[in-house]
Image (cartoon, rainbow, N blue to C red; front, side, top):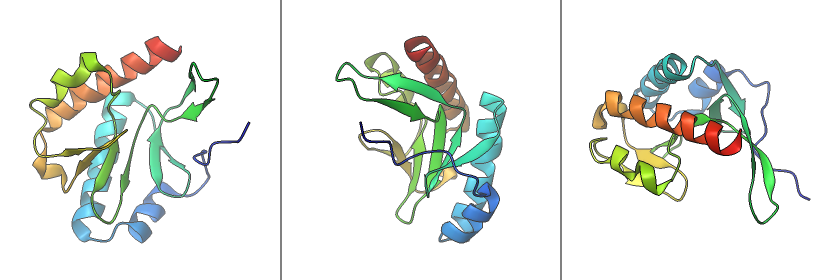
Length: 139
């Protein structure tokens, strides 16, 4: 079985943000996101792979047999948008996106241009529900 590319690393999260985020706004938003996610999860950030800031960890195993570890929550201040890995993708959680604000959906993440585009309290609710879903689903 091939190993997942996205594994925890020892890279300093703050150093990564300052070297990777391409605007002052993304740096500011990234530092604020760290505080928000720490408040919700109670977990310190850790780099996952070369560009994801993750919080916590869970082990998943799909019916196909594919399995691995992933952060409970995470984000990446990518060039085109900030990628938020805070949504379970579950049908039962779609209603949590209704009042989130301005965003685009990817296959496994939410893309925002800046933190000011979304409702932070709705984001916190979404993150709490995602943590609960992942812990219930994967143990």
